[in-house]
Image (cartoon, rainbow, N blue to C red):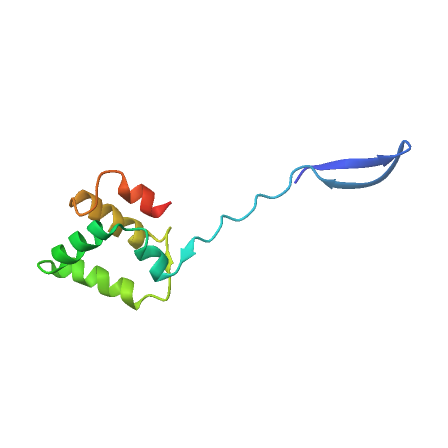
Amino acid sequence: MDTVDIFHNGVKIGERSAAEPPAPPPIRRITKLSFRNRFTDVEKLALYTAAESSVQLRVYLDDLAAAEFVDLDYPATVAGVQALEQAGIIGAGRAAQILE
């Protein structure tokens, strides 16, 4: 790592890192209720209606119910919400809004 000299009255008194290390990315975990609240009532109705005839969707909902929290960056979370948009259960552009 590059360093920068620190001078006081023309005398080197130390050095410091030239660049601060990047901050770790924030952990984006929310409660299950907070995640549910990102969906509109109409979207929730569409989701549960679709789940009546889709075992895959029921498994997704059961996995969410069993989770301690929802990680908005977890690949299965992202894929699941994007699949809801692709299936027309939520509107175009809503997956990105829900996951932000």
